[in-house]
Each structure stands twice: as structure tokens, then as C-alpha cells.
Image 1 (cartoon, rainbow, N blue to C red):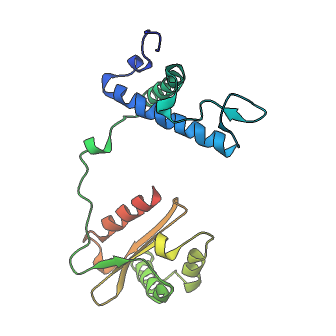
Image 2 (image 1 turned 180 degrees about the horizontal axis):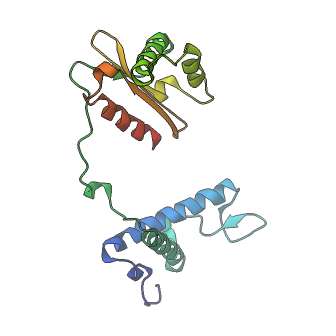
Image 3 (image 1 turned 90 degrees about the vertical axis):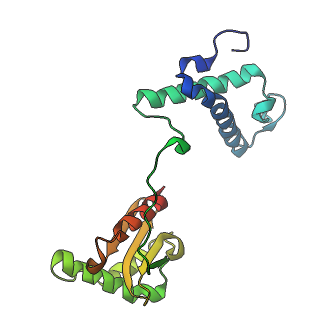
Length: 203
């Protein structure tokens, strides 16, 4: 602490102590955003005038005020550890290379002009998976007309060099996902590529 006592970060494993200061700064920034949204401004503490002396950048705070944010940062990190989470920087993770589409295939967002091709793909998949077609044009249109759904942002097509639609995926509101791969093209990594696209869009 500012008086020379034990530092808040000493409660953490050594490998996480370097996170306390940047996390404390982020916590302070979040507090300032909330206060500013409520109409507060920098200045001497005045609850009527809604001014606060701590509405300054983190590096301008007194050490006693920084310690408040540091304690919160330590508590947040310790909370994650107690819940069983590992705190690891993404640069330290050994992630597999992202899947790629097979040679000759390409991907792009769907447009209204692709409606027929998407419906045809879904019906081919229905036959392969269910034994009979089960998708109607209105089903796809209803999905595309959901409030806030953006074809250019929320859909992807996988096309052959001849322009045939053999894969389709969409994500709505970061939560609802849908994907299909033509049965004749399965087992070539297209499904894995679509899954990676869906995961990225759902973040």
C-alpha cells in the first residue's frame, strides 16, 4: 500500500501480479465512464454539482485512490481463480492453425439473390439427413428478416468455382447459430471452417 505495508498484489500468484496495475487502470476507466454517463465532471467533490476529483486519468490519481482499484483488481483475479479459471494470455496458448477451405472454394456473405441457392442447399441436406426436404423459402426469409439481422455481417456462403452454394452459415445476435454443408462435400474440412467462422462471429 502507499504507507509501505503489504501490496494487494502479494495475495496473487507471482505470474499474475503484473496484471494488477493494468487491470486497476481498466477498472478506473470503467468507473469514469459510468460517472460521465451519469453527468459527473472533474472538479472538487460536490454531489449537488456532480463533480468529482477522481475523474482524471489513472496515472493522475493519488496512490491511495489507485490502491482502491488495485484491491478490486486483485479481488477480481482471485475470484476467477477460485471459480476454477486459468488466467492465460492468448499469446501463451498453443492454438491450432485455423482451418482453411479446400482449394477451388471461396466464401462470401449471402445476398438476397442467393436465396434460391441457400434454400436448395438446405433441401439437399434435409434429404440426406432426414430422408425428405423440410425447408421452405419462407423459413430462410423469416431468418433473414429477424430484427437486427444483417446479411452482409451475419451470413457466409461457401461456393464452388462454378458458383454453386455448398455451404451456408449464419449467426444471430451472437447467440443463435445455423450451418449446413452439402452432403456431397462433407468430410473435406468445410464444416470445420464454418464452425470456426460461427465461433468467431459469436464472440
